[in-house]
Amino acid sequence: MSVIVEFRVPSSSFELGRILSVDGLSTIELERLVPTSSKTVPLFWVYELSRESFVEAIQTHPSVTSASAVDVFADRTLFTLDWDADEDVIFRSLTETDGHLLSATGTPESWTFEARFIDHNALSRFSNRCEAESVSLEISRVYNATAPDTGPWYGLTERQREALTLAMQMGYYDIPRGCSTKELATELGISDQAVTERLRRAIVALGSATLNPGDTAHTNR
Image (tube, rainbow, N blue to C red; front, side, top):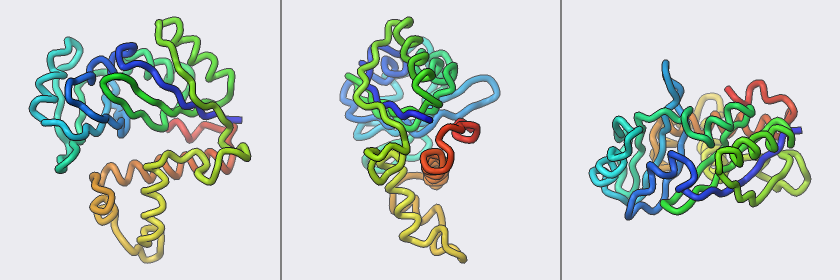
């Protein structure tokens, strides 16, 4: 049976956390990791910080080539970072143990992750790999997605649940559709692409938690 873990790590203990430890930064939300032909790059939201000062600060890191704004709103900006996430101990260890990242939110001090593993053995392998790289995980919760005490969300993150609930309320899944992803994006304050990806991840998480939680063949795609 698949297992979901919530854990916290200091920002100073992994490379992306160190890169994004910028003075004045309040919150960072990892939107997703984007595979390219040669590497995997992060797409993330930065809240309440000047775009120019943020880009200037992170480009001083030796492993960062550039940072680009993808979507800009009054209180937040969606960035992509020209940096290879596969070189980071957290993300590399997740890949090597067939873990699936559900969410990641950080500050200059610490990051909170939620990830799914095929079973407890896979989670143990992930934890051991991190410990071997001197990354100590502060695990706050471990649970099976179908256990009675998991509540009504069935493995969904708060933002995935919000997007899926809004899509149903606005008739996105009706025939004919009652709204478009662009209209959903306007309501949620994110990009059209981000809405599509968030709904996809929500459906994958919901299906994995309720249909066949022991089979992760589709979860990690």
